[in-house]
Amino acid sequence: MQGIWTTERIRAAERKLLAVTPDGALMRKAAFGLSVHAAKMLGAPSGRRVTLLVGSGDNGGDALWAGFFLRKRNVAVTAVLLNPDKAHPQGLAALKRAGGRVVPVADSPQWIRKADLVIDGIVGISARGSLRPDAASLLEHIKAPVLAVDLPSGVDPDTGAIDGPAITADRTVTFGARKPVHALAPAACGEVFLVDLGLDLEDPDLVRLEAEDVAACWPIPGPSDDKYTLGVTGVAAGSAVYPGAAVLSAGAAVYATSGMVRYAGPAADLVRSRWPEIIATGSVTDAGRVQSWVVGPGIGTGHEGREVLATVLGAGVPVCADADATTLIAQHSDVLDARDPDTPLVLTPHDREFARLMGSEPGKDRVAAARACARRYDAVVLLKGHCTVVAAPDGRAMVNTPRGSWLATPGSGDVLSGLIGAVLAAGVDPWLASGAAAYVHSLAGELAAAGAPTSSSGILGAISDALRTLHWRKS
Image 1 (tube, rainbow, N blue to C red):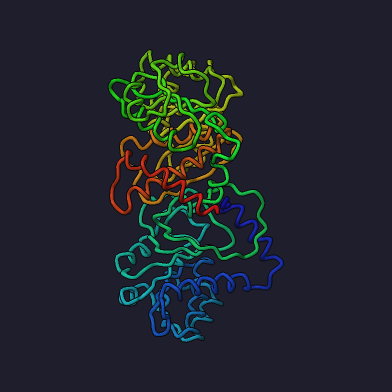
Image 2 (image 1 turned 135 degrees about the horizontal axis):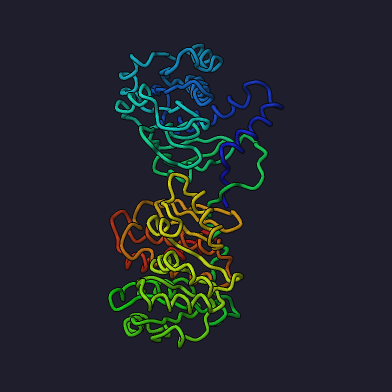
């Protein structure tokens, strides 16, 4: 798992390291790593032009020292000082010694437009809010690729929120450890690279699963397995109005593992015709034994849907409650009385469903919002969005950074719920199962799209390809 730490903890770790490190050594190490990435972006750096956008903090110092190292590679470097009186003195002196040019903001547009690369060193991880007007005025002149120092200026480092003018980077080089912004604002950060400074950091505040983590936990049949040992997934979904939800959710469970899938609901004939390997019945009371339930997609929010939800919650197995099930829980909280408190529950709201559950939308800090919801309902909460956040009642949190926006299509959530249910049935920890399912879901979306919009049926059909990709990476 890839660890992510809040800026407060990173600053504390930096202070400890600075106390035992020669003055300026840490900044020069960070800046040298930054300059290496800048040179890679330039290709053949000699004779190329780089413009530094330099603020008053340490990020400005990093940019100036990176300019010093780039001058050693015969790169023409121009520094735009947004606050000349507060520019990092040692970094500025080093750049000038190396032959770098320094210009005020008023003269900067021509140098920004001429640049082959712009390095954003305007603000660092201590800053909050959007860019100030003088810095924001420079954005319209940027034509070249942008390399951000630690994070794109104007983006909140702990929430990834963008409230106004901000840098959009092609690449971000961060120092010491990854910050929440790198996972929560991928479109602003671009590709993120880490320069290790040797910070002493314990358990991360947030994690992001990598391919190897998902492959390791995903249920794959072994020599002694049969149709029962990898788990039996129950799917209670669909209605006369929304039969497709049943097909998508049950189909995802079929593709996810080699375990058995049982469907219960009014779309039994359609599900059976589409998936002959599924055992389909008309009622959850007739479904037979399962190791997990997926409930909610397309079941409606009336009396019948509420009865189905209560029956499933009382079955004593892990439950993934999606779509209409989350609305029913929000409207009729007493339905949760049917649940054994020791039985795992996964809730999968999007923002509007979250607002029904919690009384307000998640807001800017989506990680904190998901954690609060997980505590209130004593459930794993998978908060859908461009970046999916998964929080457990004990405070664990992970984020799944998307591969584009291909999952923004009707029925995509039904596919995700089927994936979660299948992994739950295999006995995987609900928090990990939800995060792994979100990873496979987004990978399937990327493969199905192949650069163009796709449908949920396309995402469903790409699940096997996604799992093959994971297996290849694992081996």
